[in-house]
Amino acid sequence: MEWKRAGTVAAGTGAILAITLGGCAAMQADRTPEELFSLAVSGLAAQDSYSFSGFSTSAGSSAAKTQFKGEVQRHEGVRLLESREGEADMLETEGGIPAGYNPAWLLGRLLDSKAAVALDAANSEAGRAVLIIRPNPAEAGKIWRSRLQDQWSRIESSSPEDSEVWGRLDGSRQAELKREWNRELMRSAGQWQEMMDSLSADSSYTLVVDRGKLVPLKLAENADLHYRLDGNKADEQRKTEFLFQLNH
Image (cartoon, rainbow, N blue to C red):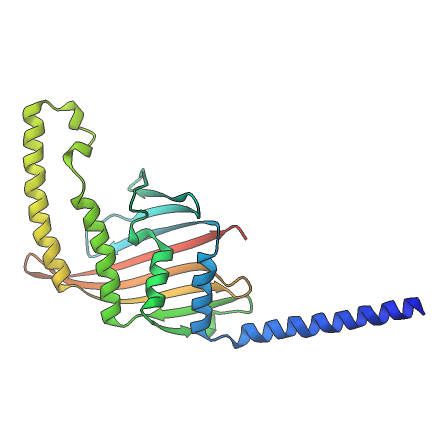
């Protein structure tokens, strides 16, 4: 009798588990693309630590391909390793990661912008959902202005004293370098303002989400930027990709 009762309990437990797991699977299948996106952003924010890697390219400008790796620690901030043309530098500043390299910032902005989200059913599978995210052009322009303004602010706050050669120059050469630096900064500021005033953007994003853990696995961005530079029309095609390495 005891074995029979145990078997009955086990069978009952198995039935409960089957119902529960089946219910979870149904809930996952019923989640809308918007819900998957929101939950993935929340899932990333809830991580105590994670790392990411990626690259950025620009067609239509002289910018070199940039590769980067980042480490996020909830209580210790962020470390970012950037590599351009084989030269690596640690980017650790009081302002945090530059917006262009910060996937959490980018995902948050896309969520806040109420971008259109759709499921790419052809490339999705049981364990992973592929989402296509498209902000409207006005919001895409705002996101890119924020990113580029962050980049410009870092350039603007730099000085010739930060350069490697500064300490090796005598007083007259330091003064000359500082004059040249300021002239170039003023010229660049004018170009930058012209670019910002005329900038428009058309961006799309592909986000791969782990359906079970509800965290992002990969984020790819494709953007067409249009602006004026020195009075002429200019176009750039920017591509940025992030791969996430989560601890759990």
